[in-house]
Image (cartoon, rainbow over all chains, first blue to last red; front, side, top):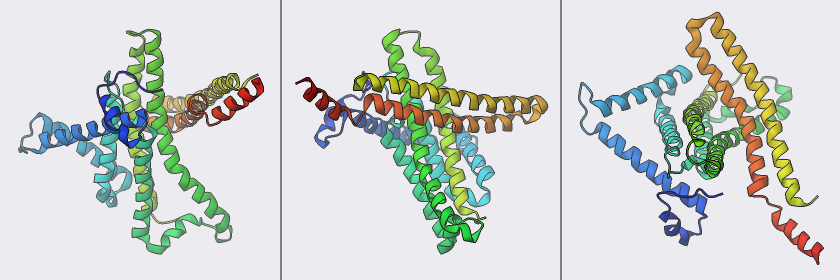
Length: 229
Length: 91
């Protein structure tokens, strides 16, 4: 089910030599659009930094300070170095989700490749951070408190750890793609008024899913930073 | 009954059952949150945040069921085999 009537539909033909299916070409072109949008917004906000901030700078300061407070609340002081990673993921996911509500735009997070990429980044960072912080003692995280149950607990912990990127991917992809499918069905049924309540719910779901993604990323990184049980 | 009607049947029942469990689970979560806010209205900000996180976790189980149903309906891996079997059976 490919989304009809998109503004950047010509990218499907542009990317056709790479044998990319239509849905992925949509996600790629709208990811580029989100990247461009975020770069332009950041340049506008930081181009003339004043002591008494103007409108754009004030707004970005609120967002950045809000995320930083949440990171220090959840992860403690040693969570500060991860602020760029988590803030980038959070703002990218939020803007990607919200852009889908404008008619003619497609949310890149409604494609499983985008969400899988974000989830794999979080997964790899948790393990890299754990190994950098604890060295070889990181294996103690997988062994559990009772030493003679360690082989069984090792497999259970591995399965639990592997389920994290799967759940992150599917949660974000399922919410966004399900919303797009429902909107497509409603547009086919009754074009002007029936999709509106679904779009209101879409705003709520976009914010909540971006918030939950950011929170889970923080909790996973926090879990690999702290000492084993 | 043939393959495609069983697919539609499975997708409908699967998503319906997924929604039942999620509805009950999220109902319990909201019940706990509302009781907490009723006892202590000053803590409503933290209680609301925790409730939102809990709801998103529970909802993700229904989303897993939804993804399986979408795969069954739209990206079914056995569709080609079923079509080939139906062709050979029709001859």
